[in-house]
Length: 336
Image (cartoon, rainbow, N blue to C red; front, side, top):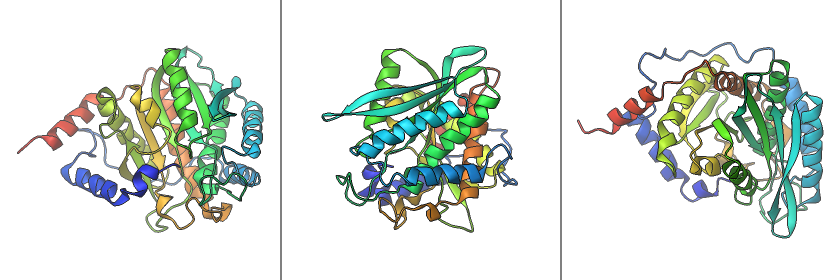
């Protein structure tokens, strides 16, 4: 996760979130049932498989975008996506200075509306305390092997039961250097006029900051570059909260910042994200970000919540009430 925007203003961001929650900006649409914590992830999501993939990613030593092992990781991910049954797997090239690096693009082709896409993204590159250190140890277990492993688990589940719309799993590189991979792919989507229903970002979803609460932050667009996608983002985030609760975690509202959904949002795409809040942990961007920092069951619950939302977004019969979300925003911001 490249949360550099928040590193100098993290306290400000938390105050903004708290203030918006206090004024009701993050309330649920009218008529939506109250949240209740469920029994955990379904059997289709395997904590053991997630941890096996986290371990495999960590075994590269570093996945720094300027390292040769970053390229090896891309090849490994492409092989894994093919092995779990994706219909199409390609490497999307982009440049970091003189080097060519790769986003890994894996598609589950829709059975009814294959030209419409749900995007799910997670960056696979890692870093340690020195952002320019491409050789030193940077295991990146939580940031972001957790999200990358979730992509593989989601691919397995979707390949077993393909949806009506296409689902595209995106493993980005260059995130830690300024969202370079996602910027490049978002431009490709815009240039090719790809129809995107929703973009879901998974950046650090393995470490509960409070073991007792086991909270997971559900991020939505607070009014960034493209205002037209704000209300739909809030509506999808509200829906995602219900899935987070059903998977056994406590959903907490948050706003999008500093990760791979940003270039898509700037192009008008509706985006949401899941995030564990561990950019405040002492192992963040450190060689201590090892697999023991990832809670397999917590990561599985986050993955299950994402899977439930993907299935809804990929179903043309499912309708999200963006108008109700917009009304809740307007009411919260209107003077008494």
